[in-house]
Image (cartoon, rainbow, N blue to C red):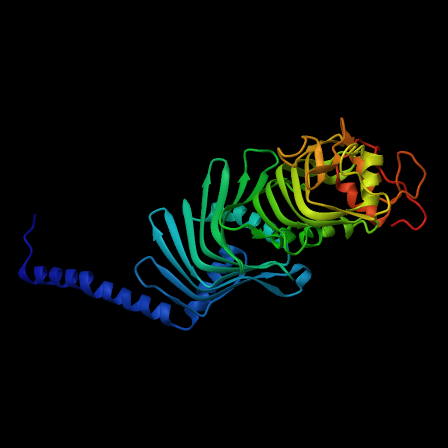
Length: 441
């Protein structure tokens, strides 16, 4: 090795000092200039927008620690179909991204999500899961003390203590969210799971919603899926688990198990079938209920099993007569006979266990408790008024009992606004298909 001269050694030492001090300093100064120049926020917006497939606007971007990013005043917008402009889909006062190895933790402040409707929101979430494979992390966790969800008129909800986790494995991505749904009366802890099973062909998307602890939720949360407030009344409450599934781009199916509290029987029956009277507040304990596509009949309930209890209340004599005539309910033969001169009957208890099957059969039994006979379904005090049918009834009989009997006896019933709402119940093919009459809808 050739020995270096003194000037050469001094030159090398100077170069090393420049490399170890001045170059990092210059790089830091350049980086600081780049992130603080006015155009840097716009550059970040463009980069985020390309990755998310959305338009992104930011108020500011800062870097609290090496590797961490803090976005302030972030708003995400999506282009409307047919070039109708941009619609906001999400915003947050701040998003703080903290990477930890292959995981990413996101802390959000004042998070708000918006959709034009439940179907559009679920489709957007599904698209987000499809792109989750592009995220350079094995797991993404998000926390937020508050989150507002707006899915359209009358479908705005406030959630708190939100903790979400997105992970992916060989079967596909899964998004899990724990939160408290904040209502004027309670803060109920709930969970939501959205998963895509890529092993199935076509891919199966599953959305599950479940109450965990706290008071039952207001029934209007079901308005996301159906016009629940109109069916069960504005004071109704719900708890349980609802699971939705979709294969490819096909129709959604649903399963529910849980309880409906404070159901308004007037809204459920009398508002739909004005010729019949039923009043009171009920609880419906649903053991299992399935909704889906029925061959030859379209979408509707496939089966339902549970128990309805209510009381005190009142029921129209005409409704009791129709149930006895068409569904074989049996009036009491000993005590508590119904006075035929009355139009309504007061009852202290109503209890009915039901099992509605895919072929349209309905198996009914009493549900008033041990103080009454097992087949008693309606009672005034200690006296049973009505007993359950012996053997199976049918959806066809239920339709004929609820729809005014102004047509000739037979299999068919008129297609009216009243009978139409019952077409979603299971029935044997052709057994309960209404016929069109003049003036029918």
